[in-house]
Length: 189
Ligand SMILES: Cc1cc2nc3c(=O)[nH]c(=O)nc-3n(C[C@H](O)[C@H](O)[C@H](O)COP(=O)(O)O)c2cc1C
Image 1 (spheres, rainbow, N blue to C red):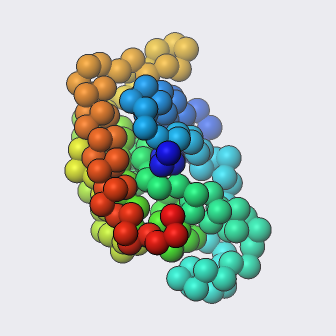
Image 2 (tube, rainbow, N blue to C red; image 1 turned 30 degrees about the vertical axis):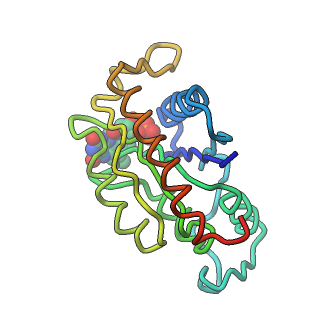
Image 3 (cartoon, helix red, strand yellow; image 1 turned 45 degrees about the horizontal axis):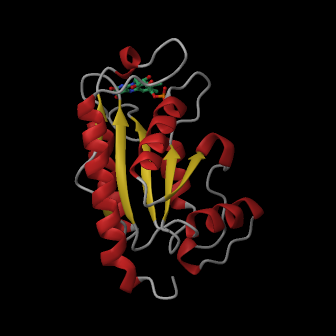
């Protein structure tokens, strides 16, 4: 079964990222067809990029990079759970992307964004050239959650509506299609 990694991209204390990530993982599990893994960049705990060689060489000096590389290499597709910070995506996510190269390549990525009135959509638009540089395929269907603070209850659970669930399903279906289409570009998998 293909592995879908859901990556929480905010790391600050008090963040809502884990609430959104838990919902995405639940939705992906309910759909079926994926081995779902929830990754929290706060737990991955990478330093600011500190590899001496270009990641394209895959010659990683540090244990933390080798661990991160093994984790990302094990995935067939991703969902980035994206906070919007100053009209863009988070620094921890850019850092986590920059650490690696081939491990991201020829894999599809879906976006679940959140924020205020713009629902994190500026963060999604900002990351598209970055994932393209890594030869990733951005899924068109996405989940964009506006006024996210109002949608999380006192237990920290995201109160999703039908439209959000329908959007998530479209995104997962698209990721599943891209996994099939991209398989010939990933020989040995
Ligand atoms: C540094 C910072 C910048 C922010 N910039 C934006 C923004 O540009 N657009 C927006 O809709 N919300 C913005 N917000 C509000 C976030 O959408 C909101 O705090 C959200 O909970 C952040 O995700 P997190 O809780 O997972 O960190 C910003 C929040 C922070 C902390």
